[in-house]
Length: 136
Image (cartoon, rainbow, N blue to C red; front, side, top):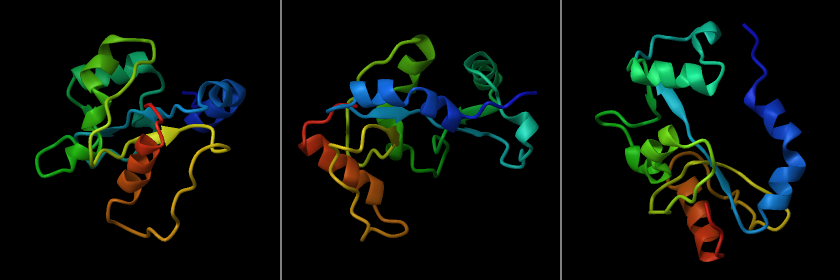
């Protein structure tokens, strides 16, 4: 299996991301294995089609979407819509959503580094972006 990796993919799209994200942030849907004992890199889906097969087989789920997990942190991404589309769409921000994001940091308000460890750090940063009229 060949793992190109997400970071090299993002680097290859750097200029496009910068051009598209003057006041827009791209959210990254995140997933986790249902069986938390799966730790082999060989078990990771390598593309969207394989990821969708894992989701349909109930071996993978949206991150933190299980019982007693913090689903509010990612629910705003509308995973059902992501499953159905292959193009970007706007997500509706709702506190305390704190998805993983990618964007042009040149114009973005800086992340407050006084936030450490657990405690709405990303959620607060994203709320600041919402107040600055960024879309997701």
